[in-house]
Image 1 (spheres, one colour):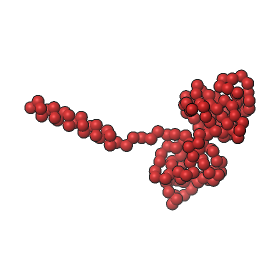
Image 2 (cartoon, one colour):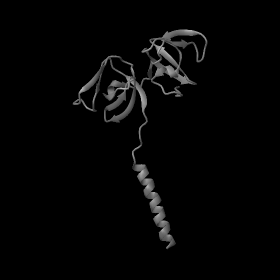
Image 3 (cartoon, helix red, strand yellow):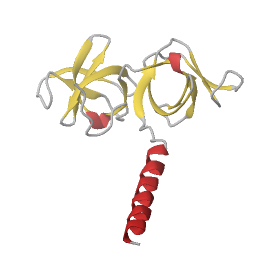
Image 4 (cartoon, one colour):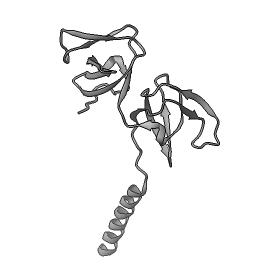
Length: 160
């Protein structure tokens, strides 16, 4: 009897482990950017779905929230969601200034010297994020800005 009970318990543990392994893991959302000069957002994952937006701003940051075959469901900085072809989405990290006033781009994180200023809506490439600061490059003019003033990086996110 004891051997049968042990077998049943072991079988139940194995079955619960197998079902946990079979459940698909959720993909976390990640930031990317628009790769093309013109990119259509569609209402569904296919060319047969109507276009809802035409983006004409390459490097605009987007958040990829889902994937289906060669399609990515993205969210733009304004909160609009839709589907784009995978080829129209780049892994290049960019961000947009969301502060209501121009932000200061400093010579180093928490530095005192202001190298440039970036107005609300300006898009640039981000790198070297840590400690609440990111290196923000706008067409070759670079400086460090506070992460809280950008959409395209998570608060507290670290980038190499």
